[in-house]
Length: 366
Image (cartoon, rainbow, N blue to C red; front, top):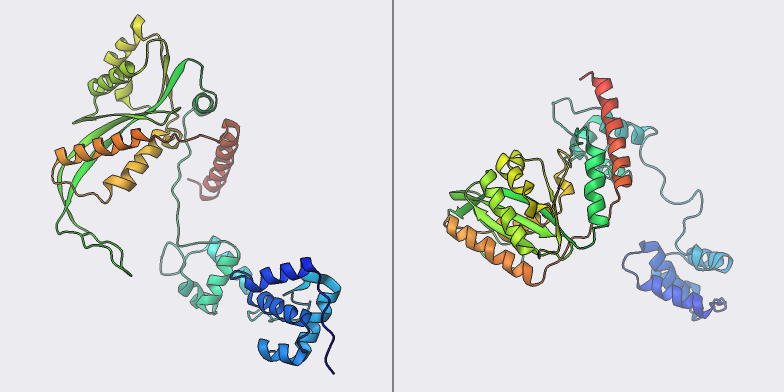
């Protein structure tokens, strides 16, 4: 006796075909989808079982579940069936406790899968799965710093408001210096990239001097003004301010976002800004320890990643030419960085961070 062809609607058949062709769904879903398509074509259960390398009884269960639940039941594991837990009770909780609250006895700063496996008495792959299931990555660490600026909220609202709602008839610049850009030359030529191997460069290098980069990004257009100097004293900052001033039509105001470096507020700069011809100038200082609030830092990252980090420079002049050329190409097709986070969201996040830090300080008494 051969079972009748499985009743499959056009919509169900289309969904089963999608499942059967998937390369990301669980294997059992793909196999069952193929089996049900064959069943819909009238293929005998025994033949389907042979093709899927299962028993005919399994095929009959798949057909029965499909008749009751449709495509939503394909690949599901019935309650009480499937692989049983192989770890002793409480093992997962112990791994999580150790990961969060203790360190290895050898003084290491964090656990590895092997040190945790040796401590708990399970396999390293089991530890890796527990960490993956709970989205834990003990081998990674991210840096942070919460600003202690007493005027943090005030400055944050000012700068973010400038990004999200810039004033009319004005140009907004994000300004900073990238100091001590090093002209590094490698001790040996780099090896080219080839299949199976990335490009290479020597780990050691020769220093050929440094230079300071001044940059100001037009927040609206993404264009960047640059200048290269041997230092970044008040006189150097003033020279760059004059360059910014000359680039903006006299009918527009100038708003500049900058950090609290002492060179940005020297007496000569204050005197220059106090002149009646600079009434259109407005400086907006970011809070201390908040370089992430200055959009020019994002442009510095682009420059570093795409030109400086893997560059080879035989002299400071070579480095200066490379930076100037890269910036000129950027300005041919500038890409502004769009700020999206609101001041309210940032303040709420910082408050949560401060609360967590206070708890930790209270527990450790320092």
